[in-house]
Each structure stands twice: as C-alpha cells, then as structure tokens.
Length: 218
Image (cartoon, rainbow, N blue to C red):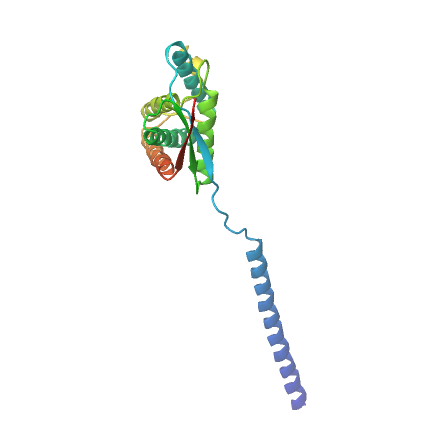
C-alpha cells in the first residue's frame, strides 16, 4: 500500500514538473512571437524643401501677398488651436532659417535636403511647401513672401489666439467661430504661445542640419 502511494506521489511530481516546464516553454514561445511581430525601428526619412528666390514687386507683389494671406488664413480656420500654433511656429523658425542660410539670394533656386525628419515635422514641412506654391496669384512662388506672411500670422496668433474666420469673412467683419473652439482663456493663450515658440526652435534646428545646394539661376 505504501509503495503504491509513493509511486503515485512520484508520478504526480513528475507530471507537475513536466507541466511547469511546458508552461514556461509556452511563455517563451509567446514572447518570441510577440518580439517577432513588433516592427523593427526604421530610419527616419529624408525630404527636400524647395527654396524660391526673390519676391514679387508692384501689382504682382500686392496680389500675391493677398493670395498668400488668404490661402494660409483659410487653411488655418479648419484646424484646431494646437495645430495652428504648432505649425505656424515651426514654419516661422523653418523659413527664417532658410532665408538666413541662402544669404538673401534673389536669383538662385535651392534645395534643402533634410534627414532624420520626424513624422510630425515632415507633415509641417509638407504644409509649408504646399502653401508656398498654392499661395500665388500673378507672381512665381516666393519663400520670402511666405515667410513675411507667416511671421505676421505668428504675431497675431500670440496676440489674439487661433484663427476662426476665413480671410474675406474677416475683412467684412463677419465672425465664423470655429465649431471646436470655445473662448480663449487667459491661461490657455500663454500655453499655446509656448507651443509656438518650441515649434519655432524645432524648425530652426531642422534647417540648421540640412544640406543646401544651389540650382541654376532663373
């Protein structure tokens, strides 16, 4: 009888050890599978930004200034406050750094090639490039013209808050409040202004590390 009990106990112990070993092995397999499914970190992409020299003068300068202001204003109205401050701040720093690196050249196209660009910064650069070409009327694209508009908008954002009315509505005195925005509190505006300043520094740093090459004159 005792021998039978001992045999049963030994068998149970062996079974328990086997069960624990199988359980641990299953856990290891699951961990390895999870690690295999986890995507490996990919290198940040590189991207180019086209520098357009000169700035339209006279009538073309006036109409392109208005066209650029309208294009950007109307685009911002459809964005939330954080996006407006973050993107305009980035654009201000980015474009200011571009113009400093081109030494005010008025006759030479150029390309800025950037590496290690984050997804959010790449989206901001893409938006800047789009505004640069869309915001034209009678003149050619102008990085300087875009920069002057962006600087003015950045000042207005820091002073009065996010844009909520389209350009021509604003000139008529209409007020189209952004559906997702309530009143701008005294605490909220300084927070957003800090967002703008931080993004401005990020834009400057991205251009500082970019490779610049000049193209043939117009």
